[in-house]
Image 1: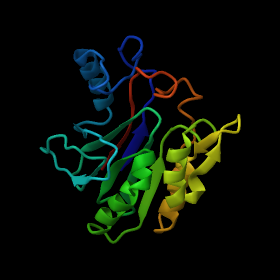
Image 2: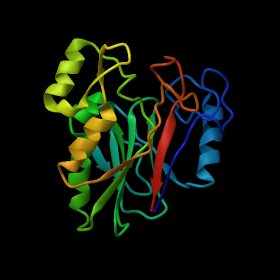
Image 3: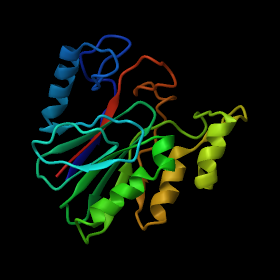
Length: 221
């Protein structure tokens, strides 16, 4: 099993997608995106993407599966690289200790509230008896993710530990903390590759610039 979290530094895209954009849906030149993906595929061949919709659909894929509309991919296929694209949301990668099944999950505030990670773990446990391990990549932090009162109440009602404040004292959500608590409740420890995508300009951030690219979390068996 291998995984990585990409950044915006390596690639061929021009501003505002400079340089390592891996998403086709943001307005970047498709040929340039293909070149960026080919660069990643040198280390992680057979990239498997999904059309992410901020839902909680989990899809098991194989080598010839077309990109599904989903927010989590699972596979038991060797040398197939699962990809989750993000620009502030959490890229969550999961695997079992026996390295027989892996998953890539897109966790935003709606995905957290709709328990997409928990659904993914349930699906993985139907395929393996081994312990599930997890790592989350760079995402927006609780001090930066300002939200309105309705959004704050909606999420914190379900996951109180996600409650946060910005540095100026306004309402915010701490999605990494909320996800850690959610996974701990089902016995999954998660490593946090802590970098805030809004604060760290090595990463794309939708909150920083609305028209921007997407980095990825990638995992393969």
